[in-house]
Image 1: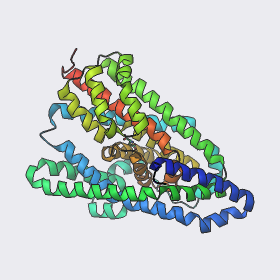
Image 2 (image 1 turned 180 degrees about the vertical axis):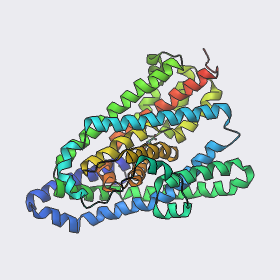
Image 3 (image 1 turned 90 degrees about the horizontal axis):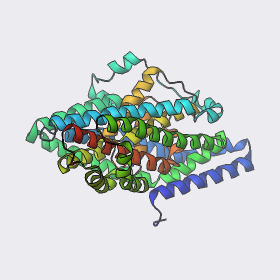
Image 4 (image 1 turned 180 degrees about the horizontal axis):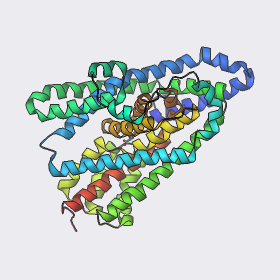
Amino acid sequence: MKKFPLWAKIFIGFGIGLVAGIILKVAMGENAAAFSTTWIKPVGTIFINLIKMLIVPLIFSSLFVGAASIGDPKKLGRVGGKTIAFYLVTTLFAVIIGILMATILQPGALVSAEFTKLAAAKEVTKTSLATTLINLVPKNPVAALSSGNILQIIVFALFSGIAASLIGEKGQPVIKVMNSCAEIMYKITAFVMELAPFGVCALIINTICNQGLSILAGLAIVIAAVYLGSIIHAFFVYGTLVKTIGKFPILKFFKGILPAQIIAFSTTSSSGTLPATIECNENNLGVSKSISSFVLPLGATINMDGTSLYQGVCALFIAQIFGIDLTVGQIITIILTATLASIGTAGVPGAGLIMLSLVLSSVGLPMEGVAIIAGIDRILDMARTTLNITGDSAVNLIVAQTEGEMRV
Ligand code: ASP
């Protein structure tokens, strides 16, 4: 199995699970569900628990480090503030487009009837808009960490990271410790992901035995929703910004960054694509080196519009298949979590899938959803990484234009 990349192994696990699920269902009929729940599902449950184990330490340490790098007073200043504002606002738009796509295309509609009975057993916390906003601030950060209140953990991590960088030398030891914690968590994530092919296989067998094959139709629509949403976001949101604030022809912009987009699409890593992104921005768009060398690396670390758009689509899809009606407060929570979590998402393949578990747990959606998405995650990662670096480039261009840093 060594020669296959991880995504291929997960895909194979998904495929084997699919075939095994169908065979079991055909061979055992009605009894397949009980059999798979007793003998197969536990493997999937262990995988899900491993992911859950990582959520709190991973999000706290990675957001702390992300915020500390933003909060560095030397780096910030006018250009920094502007860059971060553009990054966050466009990310917000991206999640909203994702949510709209899933609401319009209803990928879960074909599956929901069969899943609803499962949902009856799940307790989903309903919160109103006002409560969501009030609850953003943790009264007791330790309680937030121990109960896994995702939004509160995010808020506390952002405050702590920014404060740590503002106190200069005195904050450095803790920043170093958090950096090291984040690295440790990434390593454990890598171990856990090695088990993903087995976890995904088990959970897909269980899904087919319990709910049948209609899940596949839902997944096909999820892919369509993510790709369509990405195209809409790229052309409408970035296109408008590039044309109005960036004063740059839209088609020339897309043509200029095409080589980087192709690399992003095939490597699914915005960090890995960074050298190509910088090259395209400087040589093809004419953005000065001083702006590109700050805005683009920061973007590869904190700006993930494709990832947050995908999280919007997937969270809604999972709610739909489990027949859960989300309140306005919960939708706002998804928007806020996906936007803020994007700061802590690493620009490496598959990072968005781990962050999806965080978005799901912020509103109490079933974690099984992660395994359902995992089988097609590589296909989705190709679109979201491409959108991620497109967003970095669009913001780079508009910041450069407003700073008079275009070489034309
Ligand atoms: N692969 C993405 C990136 O590198 C992150 C993600 O998994 O969403 O930009």
